[in-house]
Length: 158
Image (tube, rainbow, N blue to C red; front, side, top):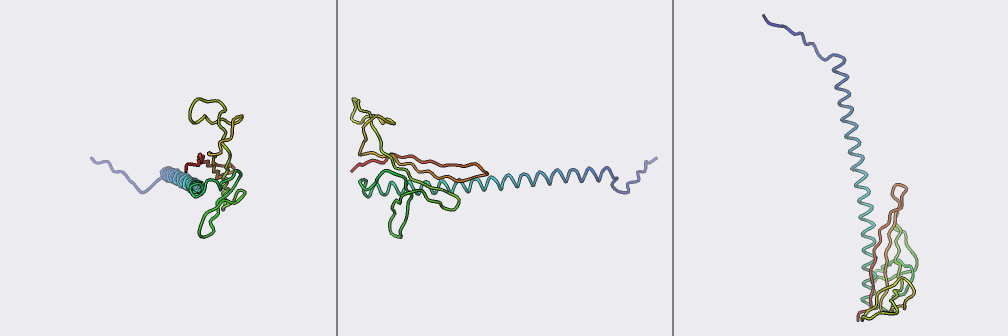
């Protein structure tokens, strides 16, 4: 004796379950795509900011190598005139990025028993053979200001 089952198609409940599963999968795919797109955009902005910061620091180091005595303290930005780099006063805006190079004096401890005294934040003597170069690149990312900062001691080594 054989049991006959009449299978004429999906019932309404089966169809609703199938639609719900497909909907969950579609929402998950859209969310994953949005997260990936957002991460790519964030990484592109950070990479561009890092490139701008490294470029500015390389300009400062190049100018130091050319003639340390031409460097002065203040806030600048790099400028290329077609043949050489220079520093111009003030920060600059490149698209959505703001870039500045801050060159400041370095102070050394007044009392020490070594060939080179330790650096101090204030109250020391200005070391004319050393300056601090700080490059800042900032941008707005989802209503939050992000910043990349590079620091380097620039010395007169000739």
